[in-house]
Structures are given as C-alpha cells and as structure tokens.
Image (cartoon, rainbow, N blue to C red):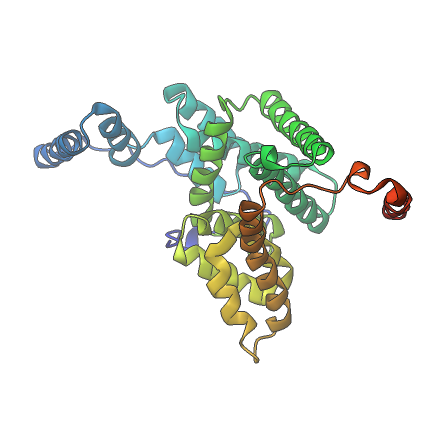
Length: 317
C-alpha cells in the first residue's frame, strides 16, 4: 500500500493546519460522463444488481466531499474539524462504515489531545487497551468450545464486560455502529485509511496508529503492511507483540528475522515465532481432543482425592 501524502503536506508537530477546500469542481465533460456511466453498467452486468454498482459509484467514482475533507483534516491533525466532517458525511451516507470508524478515531485523538497524561504513557495505555479489547472480541467466536465450565463462564463474563465498555463509549460519543458485524468491518476498513496517512515521526500516537493498522491489514495478506510492520519491529522489539495480532501471515517475516544471526532482534524474533506457531499447535490439539477438560475431584479414586485437594490448594495460593 503506498503512502500518497506529499512531505510538504505533513504538519509540524503540534501544529494545526487549515485545509483548503479548493474551488468548486467543474462539471464533467461529456466524454468523462459517458465513461462513468459505462463503468457502472459493466458492474451491473457482471455482478447482477444495483447494490455493488451503487457502492462503486458513490465510494470510488464520486466520493463524499465531507469524507474527503475529514481525511484531510486528520492528516492536518485538526481533529475537531475532522469529527464534524465525518458526521456530515454520515448525514449523507448513514451506511458509511469507514466514516464511522474514522469518526471514532477523531474523537479518540481529541480526547488524547486534551489529556494531561504524558504522551508516552498515553501511547502505552492505547496499546494495552487495543490488545485487550481485540483479544476479547476475537475470543468470542471460540469461547463456546471451551470444555471447562468455570473457565468458559469467566471468559464470557470478561467478554461481556469489554463489549459493554465499547458500546457505552460509542453511545456516549454518538458513533452510530449498528452491531458487532458492522463494527468489526468498520475497524478493518478504517485501518486501511489510517495506514495511508503519513505519521508524524515525533508523535507516538501517530506511529502506534500506523503500527496497529499494519497489523490488521496483514491479516488480509497485505504484503506492504507486513513488511512495514517487520521493519518497525526491527527498530522497536516491543512491537513484536503486534505480530500476534497480525497472525500467521507474519510467520515468514518473523522466521526470516529469527534466523538472521546479524539481526539485532534475532532472539526476540525467535520468542515471537514460537508464540505464532503455538497458536496453530493449540488449535490442532483442540481439534484432535475436543472432549478434553480439566481434572475433577471425582476423577480420582476415593483413596487419592486428598492428592487432588492438595494440588488445587497449591495452585490457587
């Protein structure tokens, strides 16, 4: 994926820039209009329906002006103005998932700008929150496969708490995602847009945003995002945790780094590689032993129940 923002357009750290909306566009010439109509007709014929054609026409050939201005304001770090434009976009297009995701991001950046906490600590908090919420939501699809009743109950309770916190935050800031399906799709689509924005090298939150976006895009086999993430890990080995979010699409890149004896992060990459491969081993083990569960006191002969009780006491101290 290519970063199309020119160096001259990048704002200075802490500086807000005015976005030039430019002159009103000229009416399209006849030849251009005919080309647009032809493209839409081709989509209708190939895909058989107006839904796909409408999406192409609105989002690619005629992007919403408020959405475009919102992106420009994000790049210029004008977060209040970006929020206003994305809300106007959603008045025109209530189904615009990327606008919803970018609206949430603009609101978050406004909150961070107003915080008195040091930016490095904010960065660490944002990373922890992302990892926590992402893990909780991703686990939801598998929690019913957990055989141990108490563990399954604890996981469900933890996931419910995380979802409630996210729903409350969305409601508080009037970010109109309809359901979890739209929320997940919107986050992935938002990552694709945020990845294109040139980060301020002196802004830890900007850099973290691109790192997280790269990890999410890597899950959909985006080679450019994968390489970017690995290059970032080479400069900051703490980011190797992002490879677990990226998943098995990062295995090849991490393995290359782990076997490079001259790499500064060879040892750390070996540890990350073990965790990446462990996920596959665990899944295979679960598939082969679907009925496996933790031992219970009743599994022991009557003359050995004291051994079980002692073991439980030792583990729970």
